[in-house]
Image (cartoon, rainbow, N blue to C red; front, side):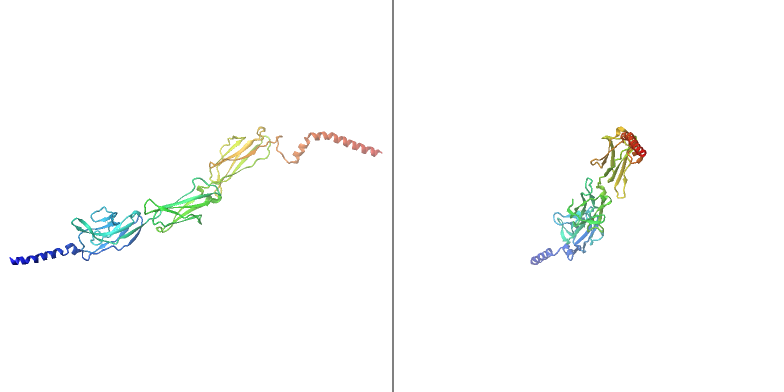
Length: 391
C-alpha cells in the first residue's frame, strides 16, 4: 500500500509534464515559413497579374487563403474550399506553392493582397501566419479622346472654343497637346477629375482659336500622353465642320438698251462656305419664275461660287423696273442687290457713232429753220460781190 502511495506523486508529475509538452500541431509548426516576396505589382487594366506565395512543408493542419485588404473589410480572393473565388491557383497539385493568377484586372481590384495560413482549432480556423502583403497597382489606359466644337457655325475673324475629353485612366498624371495643321498651339491646362470609380480619372482640355477664311481645309488635333501608352492617342477635328464664310454678292447693272431687245442680269455669288445657298429674283418686289438655278462650284481654296442669270425683254412698260437678286446662305439674313432696267426712248440704244450723231442733227427742227436763213445770207453776199465787180 505504501508503494502505491509513493508512486502517485510520480504519476501525477508525468501527467503534468505531458500536459505541458507541445502538441502534434505545435511540433508540426516548428520551422514553418510563409513567404510572400512581392511588395508591389503594377498591371494594366484588362490584363492579368500573378501573386506569389510559398510555404514550407510540415505546417499545421489548416487552409491557405488569399485576402484583399485586412481587417473587417477584407475580401477572400482565393479559398481552397471555394472554387468560385476569382483568384486561381497556378500549380493546383502543390502543397507548398500557393501562387495565384488574377485575370482581367479592373481598376477596382487595386489594393493590398495577403497570403494567409490558418490553423484548425476546435472552434474553426484561426490565423497562424500572414505574408507581408503585395500592393497591386492597376494602371488604366485613357479612352480614345473625343473633340467637340461650337454648336453653331462661326464666321472668320471670330473666336471658337474646342474641347478634348478622355477618361477611365489611372494614375492621374496625363498630358495634352493641341496642334493646328501640325503646328503646336497654346491651350489651357487640362482639368483632371475623379471618374465613376475612385481608381479612375477623367480629363478635359480646352483650346480657343480665331478662325480664318482659309481654315476650310485646316484641322485641330488633340494629342494625349499617359504612362500606360506606348504611343500617344490623337483625335482630329476639321474646322470646316463649324466655319461659315458669308458670300459676296455682285450684280452689275446693264446700260440702256434698245426697245424690244433682250437684256440679261447676272448675279455673282462669290467665296462662300458651306455650299448651301438659295438665289431668288424679284421684279419690282415681286418674285420671278426663273426656273432652276445651277448649283455652286467649288474653288481650289475649298470655297464655293455661283452665277445666276435672268433675261427679260426691254418693252416700254418695263422701263425703270428694278430687278433684285436675293441670296439666302445657311439660314442667315438675306443679302440683296438691285439693278434698274433703262429702255432708250427712241427705241435705239445710245451710240457714239458719227453717223448716228449726224442723223440726230438732220432730224433737229432748229437745223431746218437755219437752212433758209443761210441761203438768204449767201445770196446777199453773192449780190454784193457782183455789184462790186461791175463797178
